[in-house]
Structure formats: C-alpha cells, structure tokens
Image (cartoon, rainbow, N blue to C red; front, side, top):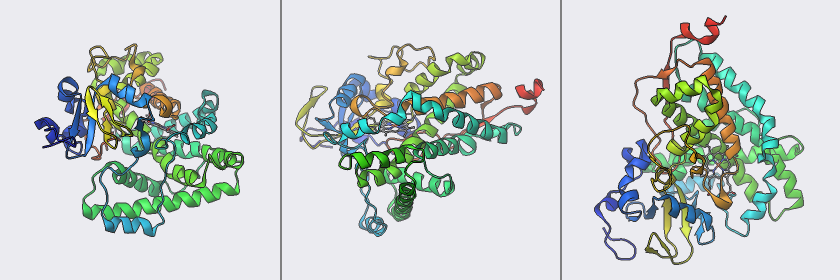
Length: 426
Ligand code: HEM
C-alpha cells in the first residue's frame, strides 16, 4: 500500500483493521508491534494515521488547536445515500457538543456547565447509585449465576445517567436499543443492509431526545445537568445554544452510560481473571479506588480517540500534513513501557495508574470522570461485600465491532448461593 504522502506503507500497517476480532479482544496487544517499532503509521484501510505511544498521544491531547477534536464523533464508516435519507427524514441534526467542539467556543461552554460535576455536587448522587446497585444485586443474589452486563451493569449506569441528566425514567428499553445503534452508527462498520435499520434507531433517538428536552424546558427548575444547561442558556444564549442542548441530550446519554457500563464490565472481568487481586479488594475495600484506576488503565472502556490535524506538523519524527485524521490509541498508550513500568502487569497498587489516558487529557478531559469513578467504586463495593466468592464462568467474550467503545457484551459469573455471606451471617 501507499500512504497519503506517497510513501510506502509497511505490511503490518496495510493489514491494520480495528474492526477485526484481534483489535476487539485486546487493542493494546493488537498494536504492540506499532508501539515497539512503528509508533505512528498510516492505515490505508481506515484512512487514518494511527498513534500508539504515551508521550505522543499526551502531546496531541495537550494541543487542541493543532489537533482539533472536531472529528471525535464523526462516522468512521460513512453511510450510503439510503441511510442518509432516513436520517434526514427524522430531522437528524446532531451537531457539536463539547467533546468535538473547537476553541474558542469550547472552553467558555465547558466552564459554564462544569459545576454539576464537582465532587460537592456529585455527593448528592451517591445514595441513588448505591440503592440501585443493591436492588439489582438483590434480584440475582440467590441464583448462583448471572450475566452481570444484562442483569446490572448495563441498566444501572443508564439509570444513573438519566438521573444525572434529569431525564424521566421511562422508555429505558427503547433507549437501550437506540444507544447501541448510536455506537454502531458512529464508531462501527455496519453492513449496507444494517445501515438503514441503524439510521431509523438513531433518528428515533434524536427525536426522543428533542421531546425530552421540550419537557424539561417546561420545568427548568427541576434537578439535572440538562436543566442546568437550560437555565444557563438564559444568561448565555450564544454559548449554550439550542443546537448544543439537543445534541447533548442525545450524546450525553451515551457519554455517561456506555462508557461507564463497559468500564465496569472490563474491570470486573479483569479482577476475576486475577483472583489474588479480587481477594485483596474483598478483604480490604479501601483498595477499591486504586484498583478502579488500574482497571481503567489496563482495560479501559475507551480504546482509542480521534483528532484532526489542522496544520502541517510532525509526530514521532514523521511529517503529517494538515487535514490528516488521527486515531490515537489511548489503550496502547496505557500499556506503554516508557511510562508504565512492566505495563502489561496488572497491579492494583500501581502508583502512577491514574496517569492513564482513558479519560483523555487536557482541555477536553472527561467531565464525568468522577461520576464514573464513583459508580465503579460503588459497584465493586457492593459486589465484593455480597459476592466475594463469585468467579468467572467459562465463556468467550464478544464485543460490538467499533474503534472506540469497548466492553464485553456479556459477563457470566457464578457462585454457590449457600456460601453467600448474608446467609451465613443470618
Ligand atoms: C469526554 C471517556 C464517563 C461526560 C470524554 C473523553 C473521553 C471520555 C475519552 C474525551 C476526552 C478528550 O478529548 O480529552 C469516558 C470514560 C468514562 C466516561 C472512559 C467512563 C469510565 C463519563 C460520564 C459522563 C461523561 C459518566 C457524564 C455525563 C463527558 C463529557 C465530555 C467527556 C461532557 C466532554 C468534555 C469536553 O470536551 O470538554 N470522556 N467518559 N463521561 N465525557 Fe466522558
């Protein structure tokens, strides 16, 4: 193959395909060769430059002018005319939110909307998260077997996301279908015959988001981040625009929900694959916050992110022209030996685990990171306390093929209910 600058592309670069099972199963392992030998390469299949080392990726995040986030949510596989017509029919007009907004628009909006994410405000959500976690565990604790994704980890972060945003709780099953479609629509490679069905789901999701927003405008003093935005719009209509609010009403659900559901499923899988670590957090729950950080580093739920190069530049000694698209493989950065000693080793006491790039870095770094951490910690507190004897069932893990959002579709665990601590203590 030949790259955009006319240079030949190495055989491995030519083969790189993030929709393949190899990438889905273990992204940092799949690009190990690149991290070691070819830290930036052009992928002719994807049309992106792929960056795999920690320092380079951090530098890219740090400079959001040269490396614009505008393509962060762009469809990685452009849809055909039929799917586009369907989207149009729903009036689909997803626009910039925060994560893909350029300066100078981004920073003032981020500042105005930040307060609900501060620890002081997040504290108010903690009892709700714990109550939900307990209710869901109650439902399966006597069964001896559960798919934690289907029976807990998908729905609880969705409900938490809806509460945080201030959305009414109804229509959850519909939303679940819509948000999956949104992931495939944005980060996946749907076959032509799937594209139309995906477009209908995305169109419905968009219209639903609009209706919910209208409902919220009727009662703007109620709680939730979206109504906070609606109130701020009155003071700063040019910063918190209608287009922003409608787009965030849809994108915010996905941002808060799937990332956290996947991160927790990845974390529990990883901990149960390392029974010593699991036993340690069962015996000393004080280790849970650092275990969560190491799980986010070792096996986070965002595998890669995107940036658009706005001026000719150099990355890892390579000339990269303006207009190039970058796939920055944050999961690979998190396994870079240059930053993390013995990087593949899973160590819940690792001192620099929180240097991971799973939440991004710099001016766009995830605003919801502390909400996500709180949820993950509470889920682990509840599960280690009530099901310390749980283990992974035999299974093959499957992933929705896409470049960025990553977590097992199912996570089967099993245990002997006769050994449940709350029975033994009864
Ligand atoms: C941005 C990951 C949970 C809201 C981001 C970015 C990543 C990310 C990679 C882009 C960062 C960058 O460009 O530097 C994650 C992961 C999560 C998670 C892995 C869970 C484990 C949440 C939650 C919310 C949220 C619970 C709550 C609403 C946001 C927002 C932004 C963002 C609003 C845009 C910030 C900006 O551009 O200024 N997140 N996220 N995220 N995330 Fe999260």
